[in-house]
Every structure is written in C-alpha cells, then in structure tokens.
Image 1 (tube, rainbow, N blue to C red):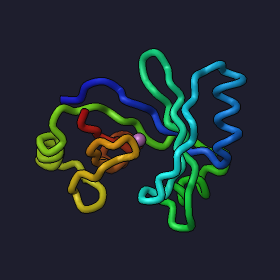
Image 2: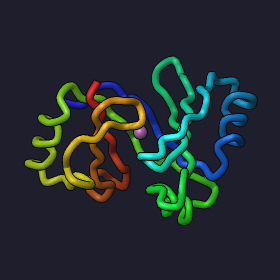
Image 3: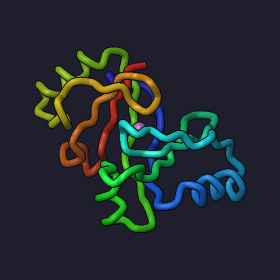
Image 4: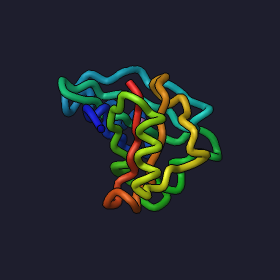
Length: 134
Ligand code: CO
C-alpha cells in the first residue's frame, strides 16, 4: 500500500540554524522557510535526490510540536511520511488493522497542500507516521 518515502521530518528548536547547517555544512538545497499558522509550524525543506527532509520549528503558543521539543530540547526525528494513492482507502485499511489514527480521522490538508493523516507512534515501533495522498 505505501509507496515512496516522501520525507523525514525533524523538529528543530532554531530553524535558521538548522537551515544553515544543512545548506552550508552539508551542502544541500534548502527551500525558503514557510509559516503554516494552521499547523502551528514553520517549515523548510531540504531537497535530496531521493527524498526530502522537513525541518520544522514551532509557530505560536499552541504548536503541536512544542511538547516534543520540550522532551527533546536539541530537536529530533519527528515523523516519517509515506506516500499513498488513496488516503481514504489507506485510512480504512489501517483502522481495520487496529492502528490508531490521530485527530478526527478525517484527512487534513498538510503542509504540502495534499491530504494527510497521522498514525499513532505506539502502533508503529515508536515512529509517528504521516500518510500523504500524492
Ligand atoms: Co510531514
């Protein structure tokens, strides 16, 4: 069911420092940071030949990644995003398999303008999973 690894998301306490690290030290192409107030994050993408790294920092007081950064002050791997062809079929299949879907269980438009769902990390070996319809 799952296809390509769309991106790996890394939560970072200081987005400009993280952008500089990937751009200047690692020599990667990094997109301009973009604010996503509806998701409570500011995001920049590291473009790699085979996938992307999503660098995320909190935006606003109610950011959903603030708790993660409180537990991991220097940042850390936050989620893996796998591509699926049909997000509703993917959701129903995961529901039948007993996986917990976060939130209302209805797909939301994610930070890349595509429908996404998140699956509980306790059901996936400690990894928060994002499914994105492409
Ligand atoms: Co993501």
